[in-house]
Length: 397
Image (cartoon, rainbow, N blue to C red):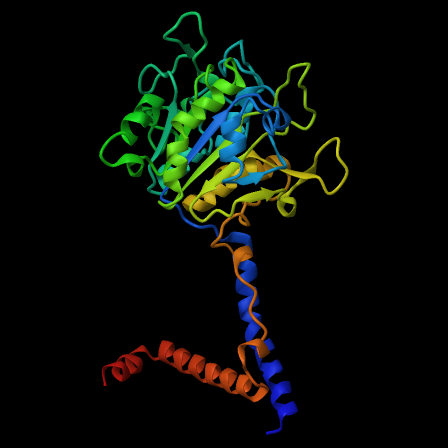
């Protein structure tokens, strides 16, 4: 067979063989996310992207966390004030809550279908239904399952606040699957002191739940305390886990609930720092324009943004849960909520490009021979699949 004919046939056969592979790669791009043993999500308070990024007041975030993470540079919160954002991230909806008061009371009447405990989908219940372990660790929470609005060991300081703890709004030990299929047990509503007790034990970080929601108190989340105080808290309490996660198939996600709404720092975009770090994450800056649904309000294209809904959908995909909560978010925004996939080393975007055939030393007829051999092997495997008894007999001879 002459060389030109070999080349033409090889190209035809290679193109045909590549079609199923391309389809599989496209599907992987849309849906595949690596699975992790542990995820810790930390939420801080009320700081604009510009207040933190490059600030000497936040040396840990700028010198350690951002350079060693997937830095989601175009990430925004959904609204103001705080409480609705926590609910959006945890359940894909604000549940009718629009302010910071206790839902279902005159302080926060909102447009609730009913006061808590809510009966709607949420990330915690999805995790439990998937056979995963889940815990919410709020700093200064006085006891497991505490439902009060506030608690402070020091009467002169704000410390624990219920509005930053979304799990409590679904907490209902008396519920049954029939009466409230999305209820959460009080046992998942825990103090951050439990987090430190668990990680200080013999199992260390490996003893944490599959998913941990960590909320510092008002002094350490940059709400009442300073940026430097919050930054130092992260360095002391979260950095050891971040380092451990790099080699233990685990993730750290860090975000804020919203930007600063104060007059001097008002940000019409509600843009906030958000990072993802851990084993298999490719460090760098990501604008995520491919999955964005809207533009920043004071920027020209292509400055598009993602939000807590995308983060929720990503967590659901990583943990293999139902997508009930992000489906709620998709309904709320009248569009499909896409997960963040391109930051992971194992993802399709990180796959190396194939080397040219000539660079590998193949001739045109050599390529044709390999393709024909591969097709014969595929047919044999298909025949074995259709006739497993015959295949087993052959393997025993």
